[in-house]
Length: 380
Image 1: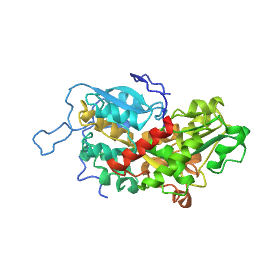
Image 2: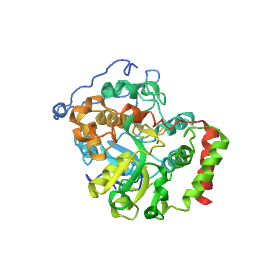
Image 3: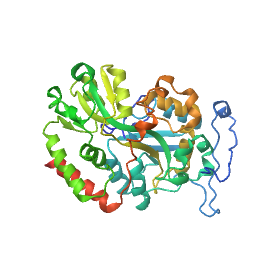
């Protein structure tokens, strides 16, 4: 969801610049080193004799390779996991689903956890790129809100666990554009010409054209998609950038209007309180980013332990408080900043959610059509 430049490093404690859920609970033995005090328990070892047995580390070492969006983690998410488990995390960043998909699909990337958006997950599952989760190893799945345990993109959390959720909308400079940003017509404002941007994601970018023309952003109609290409080619002449690196251009004032993800603008607003956010009257998209384990993950057991860690109430709340995206963790709500919980742009009311459909996976043929359409926009 969020995006910027890719950074690869060992985690150093600094932030990067982005149904029935359990068949049976297997509660883990508490380690003698004080893990009980912080609520972390030892994961059971894999059972190779069990059909479809528990996750195991193919490489027996205390390591985890994590590939995530930039600006999308709390300062202590990884350090608390390392302190509790002794597992060393290597943390890399990507800037778009397409970039991440290409790396995972190439094989041999060596990642244990990746964070695709919900519509990409089904592509990964179809392509055999991710493992099924062993939910016995993730007792904190019980903390999830029901809608995220029954979501149609992955019913029962068979292949994924939600990381965070948010919406697309328009961020803008209050000083430059005032209260005039209510919809996509804001791109026509004189002060925004050459100083506006849209996300470099095929589905998100194309949604502007589709919504502006009154079409479903999940349409499969080839004519509607072609119409949206024409709209976006016209809009492109008014833009300054097409990029998923939104936070820095907004905070610096280089850009005064941007299609962006809700959480990114809340992070940007910490650095520049002049930035505001609105969901356009035409609508936007609702999306969930998901933790999943690549098929060839060398440390799958360690990945399960991290997933269970992030589903702790305190850890999940710290993530939301840091990144400004909605939490899928019902148990975390008492620990989330009340200003976020009460902010309708972070937790939209029902009437607004009705204008924010999920980005659906439309199948290989239609998804390829969207990819081709977006290429025409970017190169046209």
